[in-house]
Image (tube, rainbow, N blue to C red):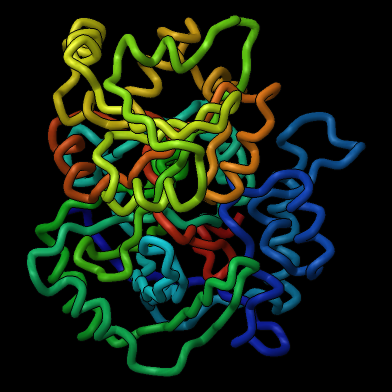
Length: 432
């Protein structure tokens, strides 16, 4: 495995450091302009000013906002708003949240360890990506890292567990939390600090033969790796990562359901789908129908809701559909072809709508939703949507098989919930 080590992190030292609700922020790539403004108003010390600084009228280029973020970090350190821990530590990041199991909301607890992880090329197969990424965010994050010299966001890494990793992570919690926050979705974020060398050594030993699967934060990892290759000094050889055991009972993967927007192409989607899928009618669409599908009560690969007549249709790939996928992507494994997102991309987007599978098209033509009720409500607008594809979550076992086969899944194949927030701890790369 890539080397793992503790570090002296920078943390908020505010009036009540145990209440970090006002200063933490979602990951940078989840923050739109409206959310930036809301977080700016929430607290003048909110981490959004560091991870996604707001563009200002006087800016001449994107880099200007990163320069502002770098100056703010230095200012907060000088003013004591942020302070560096005296001892090398790991930081235990625990999230308590509710997630649906069928129609019922169940409470889960997921526990990770924030540590520094050695940056290695994917070809070495010790740190593994599982999804494709776009180049734009990597350029943006590279600029921020270069200007600020601070590792600001968390990468979510899943550690293969040989039997004792999860327990060694839990054993690191020996004191009360150093910080607690509750986000707008009701997720409780708790940060514990452990500087006990023997406990840290036990944790490092438990993961020394493990691989790390990047669950979230591909952009940040690739950015840090590219930066290290450019600088070629030890300051940049590791990146901050939250490591979670694959055996953690709080590991929850949700679906990104796909709502397909209308394009200039005139067609009846249901008729087109018949060429590739066996179809089972389930009557008028409802949340109950979708929940029945999600829980496995309906025997179908996907559930399609047609915007025009609000019908719910179970889709199972037909022999003709399988042949089409094989002929279109002979180089891809069966595990990859059987992903619902692969079928939607290749059959619906690329073939039926005759559109290229690039990032812009997938952003403009597809709405990605987590909330089933909200998705059904949107689909009532038949002037805007052809319909929506509701898909089951991908299992961690399937992800592992695809990654082990040197493949990456299509973008937005997985939704690891909840997201890791920024602002709990920062890692300063150098004191420029």
